[in-house]
Length: 244
Image 1 (cartoon, one colour):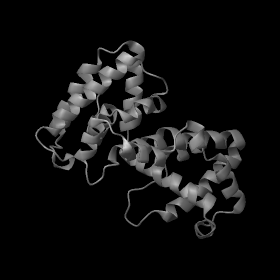
Image 2 (cartoon, one colour):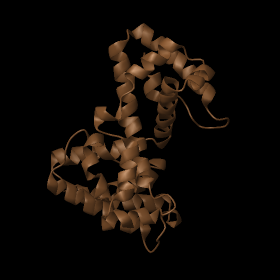
Image 3 (cartoon, one colour):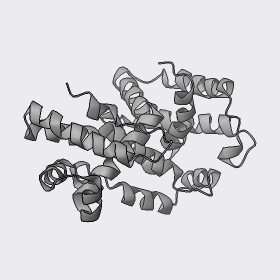
């Protein structure tokens, strides 16, 4: 699997994520399956080697070399090392990496969309401002997955990450000391795109007939677009547009 440009930049964040002690139990959410103990060890050690490679002598992540050449080198180091994984674990790692790294802009789109959907479900003033009817808001509320659906409360994950006493976890939080929750935020963004928003769409599919669902999504999309900040690169997430 070869990635170029912005996707390689996302790899740094992935290396930080898989190198951490705290997040190991969450890998299966993005991979869709559990890893063997030996694979966990290999991936974690390899992630730490990648972090050491791109940090070099720097102590602050924002000051490292972000050139395409450096990204390619760090990614190649990682890919070469994980080739030793057995087939199932190698496939799981590829899915985990893809779901964590793929399409940063679409992750941003999904985060905005879910924030919009939660607000029209819970904030009467915002719902009125957005022009969403009560029946539409009720359907959205019924279809939004809860934290309990995946045993995933991203706010609590962030808090617990900040409390992790692992020496390595403390070290990588220090690499982004002005944003110590950085790895948890990237994990949450990946989950919103890969898990939470698709689950919302699945629930809509179960609840509504196609024509009714398409019409609802059109109304939601048009309202969401009116909320985009002027000059932003936000778009309605692809999963909400690929319905026909």
